[in-house]
Amino acid sequence: MATATETKIYKCKNCGLVTTEKGHLCAPQETKRAYTCEYCGITVSNPRHVCKPKVAKLNYVCDACGRVAVGKDELCKPAEIKK
Image 1 (cartoon, rainbow, N blue to C red):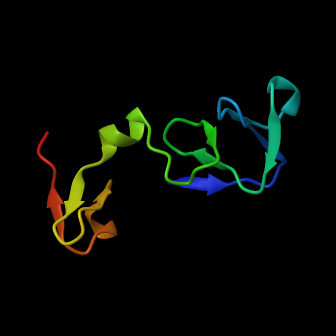
Image 2: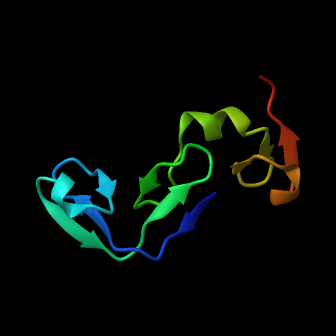
């Protein structure tokens, strides 16, 4: 899961790159919220960011709604994903 940060964060309106240094972007726009992915460490503006390290750890799917999760305690009707 991604966690919120307190520093000023900028997102390039052209390429979507997110950083704390607006001088590194060609068209920076300040964003209100940014998140650091606990799986890959990248800073993103979308809390629903999915990366390869996170996908590799997804082990369960909910039989009721289809949501996927790392732990079965995060779902109401967990079923193990066969890999």
